[in-house]
Amino acid sequence: MPLPDTMFCAQQIHIPPELPDILKQFTKAAIRTQPADVLQWSAGYFSALSRGDPLPVKDRIEMPVATQKTDTGLTQGLLKVLHKQCSHKQYVELAHLEQKWKNLCLPVENFRTLLQLDPCENKIEWIKFLALGCSMLGGSLNTSMKHLCEILTTDPEGGPARIPFETFSYVYRYLSKMDSDVPEGDTESYLATLKDTV
Image 1 (tube, helix red, strand yellow):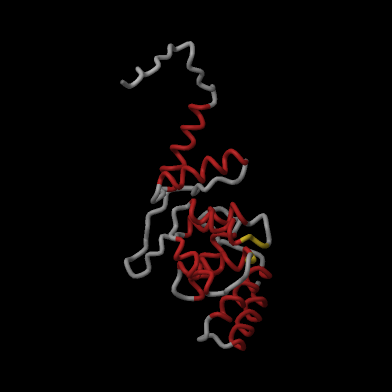
Image 2: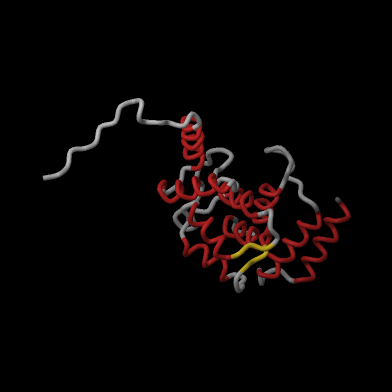
């Protein structure tokens, strides 16, 4: 025969005073981020909260623009979340990055596909991973660079999305080397022309 459930009175139940605010912030974050797997995302959220790490939360809700042909689950907003979480280091451990990827409910197959573009051992330079992520979002080199500038800029949203020229040229060279359609001479002449106008 099962034991009866233990009954508690109101005096025995202690609710920390900060709990309602924590749950309110969590709910707002979940609504903004719209995770595909709420349980997985919640585990990542509270894990980051307990460690004092940046939370896996988008700045605002984002309407999906992916099509069936290009749907990777990855969006500019999710890349921005990853950037907030990982940009404090020049190099990021792949295992650490994969966990953050999973916490955003992104398919691990896409993470591995992304890494196949530029294979590495245990860690990757963060700016290169971000550039590869931007290339997954956009079909062309220019679209990829546009996404990158919008993620990296400190300008207000809707503004010019400026980033340092050194960063722009480093990433542009990196992505253009991966694109067999872009000759190296074209890359250098484009960057030289751009530098003159900056």
